[in-house]
Image (cartoon, rainbow, N blue to C red; front, side, top):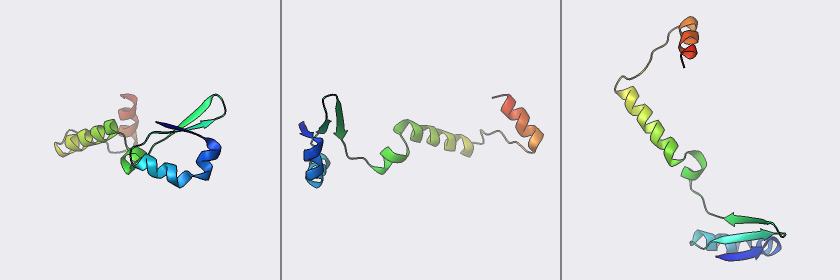
Length: 84
């Protein structure tokens, strides 16, 4: 783990980001009581968590198996929503 000041981080951003890309844990210290972790993220991190992907896959499976509720018309939609 490497701890650097916010000033040092600003001066050498690319270097520290490259280190984070290579698995180094980078902590940026800002003042006495604030610190931030520099961590690379992937598209999966940005859009959906593992749990959300699992829920989506389950929902797709249910839809393929016909395990759905069909609602037609405004009144039917209102009644359906009341039951949730």
